Length: 176
Image 1 (tube, rainbow, N blue to C red):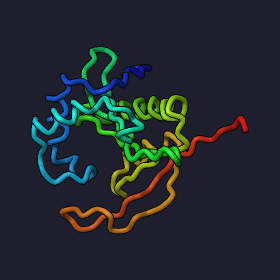
Image 2 (tube, one colour):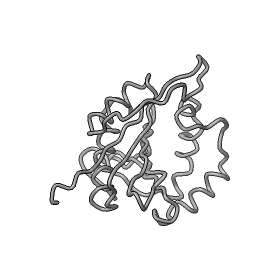
Image 3 (cartoon, helix red, strand yellow):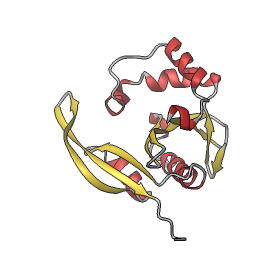
């Protein structure tokens, strides 16, 4: 468990099925996750049964963001697309609607950055953010991510095509 301040991060547990079912089936989040259809409880149960697999084997890690005061799950933070040779991974955060704008994502990202650098020994993390998602851009830039590119017409929305920003955070080794 990774804890500090008002939140803690923990591994997925079988009891998270209902929480994941609601989170994964929220259509407002589908555009950023490339999802087009609801997920069944069966699919999520199967996913949970393999969620404890080794990071180096499955090349992804999902942690649940919980409130320290009551242990209530309020989001997830993912490391995905892990490349062992290049020591990099993507990072993504989802916080339930009622808890956004309260510093939850900032705290979770800070914990994951420390964990990625100090425990997993990654060299960098990267993320992709829709140009219209100013809250996510502020979050990641505030955590030290820098814009390294733009992908034109990357996301198809009901209003047309949208560009995305590519950001990365490279961990510097000041001991060399």
